[in-house]
Image (cartoon, rainbow, N blue to C red; front, side):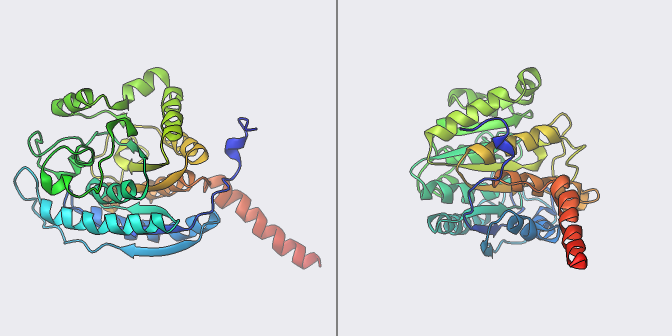
Length: 329
């Protein structure tokens, strides 16, 4: 029987991990997002995954067209290139999941989720999506103000918008299987979409008023209803004081404690098929702060932990004691 201390015990899930890097930045006006996968590898991604007792089954990189320095105009900027990448990343994600692996997908901008979520949805009869973002990304080519495709992800996966995007998923994800967390920046048309489709969402005002308890209850309800969950983690959902290295830095976002608590709860209670980490901009990071937090979140989403206490305190003692015992013998 679980008690409140059970959440601090390691998860028994030891499924191998497939890393899918998608260095795509065409869905955003920001340049430099494509450098994030290599940046996370450089900050110890593989070491952290293996420290959780997970084998890295494969590491694949989806080829992506290099972004021009000046963003294009239109209501769906670079849409055909983005769709091409999405089709390839969907195939890679579906193959990994059907092979019994969990997937860690690294963006790039949030348009990579068009492919990763499409692939995950194809691999399971029912998939729950926990979309942690300051923005709901539910515009279409008819409602967008910017024309940036990273703002059309969730609507397309539900079957709304231009056919170039809606033909990517083999099946659409039902609105009731989406859960939005951390929303704070909206277009009016996005608010209209959320209402019209009765989408479950927790804004930052909700979290400020009631804390995380209702969010965690909604996560539990979603997890019980579906075969597996996918987390789409946009790092701009976290307050810029803790995550400065993002494309759209936000004030008033999730605190470090809130983000880590959410990840801890999800990793401890849900069958996690995989996750996206998106919208990191290495050029704006400060002393690896955003990368460190992203990797700590990743460990918790996968049911483990890679905190300061583990990696700098306990691990140091383990190594020291091993040396001391050998010397005594």
